[in-house]
Amino acid sequence: MQLLDGKAISSQIKFEIKNEVEAWIANGGKKPHLAAILVGADGASETYVASKIRSCEEIGFTSTLLRFGPEISEKELLEAVEGLNNDADVDGFIVQLPLPKHISENTIMEAVSPAKDVDGFHPVNVGKMCKGLPAYISATPFGILEMLIRAKIETSGKHCVVIGRSQIVGLPMSILMQRNEYPGNCTVTITHSKTQNLKEICQTADILIVALGRPEFVTADYVKEGAVVIDVGITRVVDETKKSGFAIKGDVNFNDVAPKASYITPVPGGVGLMTICGLLTNTFKAAKKEIYQ
View 1 (cartoon, one colour):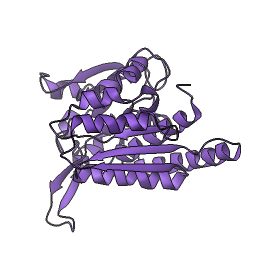
View 2 (view 1 turned 90 degrees about the horizontal axis):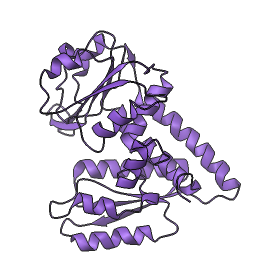
View 3 (view 1 turned 45 degrees about the vertical axis):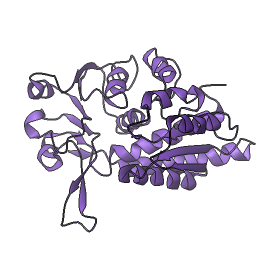
View 4 (view 1 turned 180 degrees about the vertical axis):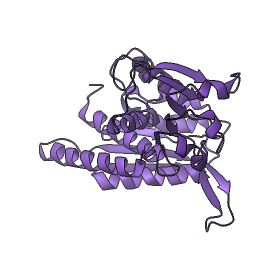
C-alpha cells in the first residue's frame, strides 16, 4: 500500500505556484487576488476559509475575506457578488457553502461571473468541462486528478466507481475520469443512495472514489485487492479523547481498507489539502486570463 499524501503533494504544488507567481510579477504581471465570501459561522467553513487565506499568503497572492451574518438577505448577498464581479483587482472569488436556508445556492452560484468562478461551479464552466473545452475545473476534482498524475497511476481502461453524485465532486469526477486524455479513459460507474448491490459494484472497481459524507462507510469488503481508493469525505465525529472534542473521519475506514489498497488517501491529510491547490491554480489562471480574456 502506498499513501497518496495530500500534505506532501500540496506542498510541492504550492511551492511551484509560488515560484511561478514570483516570475509572473517580476515580468510585470499583476499580483493574483482571491476573494472569499463567508456567511454565518459554520465551523468547518471557518476552518476551510482560514486555510485558503493562509495558502494565499504563502504563495504571494492577495486575499480578501468578506464576512456576513446569517441574517443577510439573498438580495444583499447578490449585491456583494456583483461587487466582486465588477472589482477589476479581484481575479477570482468563492462563495463558501453551505449558505443559510433562506438563500438559494443555485441563484448565488449563477450570479458569479464565469470568468471569476474559480470554484468551477457556474453552469458555463461545468458545460465547458463536459465538452472538453478550457474551463475552471471544480477544485476538489482538480486536486484528485493532480494526485493521480503525480503518483503516475494508470487510468486508461480501468473501471472507476464513484460513490456520490453531488455537483461539486461526484458528477464532475465521473465526467473527468471518462474523458479521452490522462487522467481518464476509464469506464465509469456512478453510484448513489438508490444504487442496488453497491458493495458488489464497488468490488469491481480498479479506482474507487468515495464522496458521500458518511464517516467510515466503506470497509474492506467493498474493496478489491489492489484498488486505488480516493476518500473525499471529511466529517467531524465526537471524540472525547481529543483535545478539540472531535475527530476528523473520512468516508473510508482507513485502517480496514488500507491493507487491500495499492494506493489510498488519508483523512485528514489527503484530498482536502489538494482542493485548496485546485482553487489556487484556478485563481492564477484567472490572473493570467488563460481561460477568459
